[in-house]
Image (cartoon, rainbow, N blue to C red):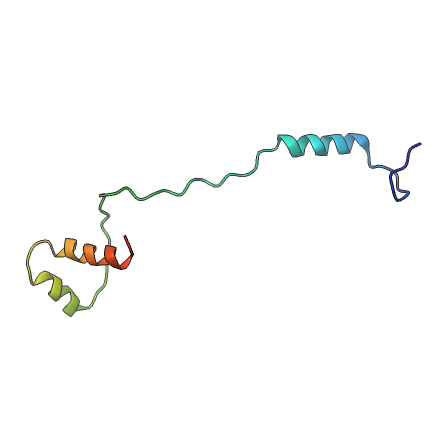
Length: 78
């Protein structure tokens, strides 16, 4: 009977073969891809900001939400 290095008996050949088979046939768990933002798509959100800041952006009339968005984009480095 052949002994492995170190004097111990080899493990059960059937279990060793099953473990080796499982190792090469098991697919690694894949994480789902992160959803990327679609350029130009707006999302409705609720945002609490100081009243004076809101008044500043609203004083020039319509388009105040776009102006706030432009400032936030710049601050985010986009």
